[in-house]
Image 1 (cartoon, one colour):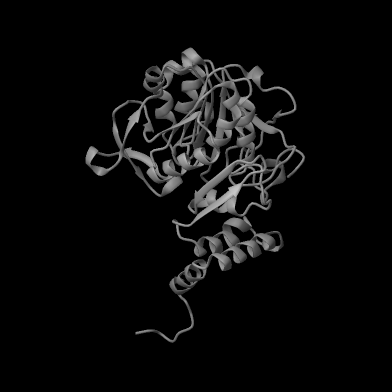
Image 2 (image 1 turned 60 degrees about the vertical axis):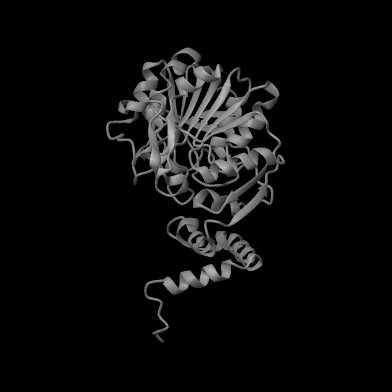
Length: 357
């Protein structure tokens, strides 16, 4: 029996109504454009995107909805509407933005790609938000980007984006990076938030490989490793000890409080200890966990022992270098005593880049 009560106490009718509106692509596009236009005018104590516009736009979509965007450099991306990465990319204010996700990490990876003498390994390559751009950057040097993405749907999207951009210097491996090869794993969680847990061969999961085994089988030299694999970063680097010791690649990896206990400081964490023991110098990378144009802003790096870590559970990217002399010039800025989380709605002293947004 249908109630005549106009109140939608559990929000189900509103959710259904929004999804119905979202099935009309023209109407959906107009609503997204309107919310994008009005975001700067909306008053909110927290982040407007997270508290107001984002939930409305999410309600318009199904996770099977697909989009395509073209960057300013001509790179083309097709992507499923899933998680914040797709949502914030869709809401980019520029018709042809400069990047897909995390502007400063994108700059960092492209800067590190200059003059590389070894291949690139990307763990958690997703639909190619970073891997496609890095592959373009190293193509003329004859280098290959080795992508690891165990999510079958995103791996297919990654292959499609490599084809769209006519890149033949990247390979896609639907396996997980781990401390041992040949383990059976599965993904627990949704899309980009899923983490690797033990599975079995009959569960439709995937196998693991170590970076050391993969590199030995491929017979390549590694110049750069990027890892964003939801808590498996330590295991992946434990399986890369030989490559780290012999090749000394630059390493960019995510470190998240949900998986790493940093209550005694970053230096005491197992993942940082592993890299420090191998002669690396570590920095936290200041970035915004979103899509935001930051033209002319250098990549700000915080020395390991000077990172402001207080706040709710959060994550950020780290940079590990065997040769810290690689970061010099106007593309870089060393800062101390601040947070790696760039948050426009929080304290400018701790959470804004030097000079402001």
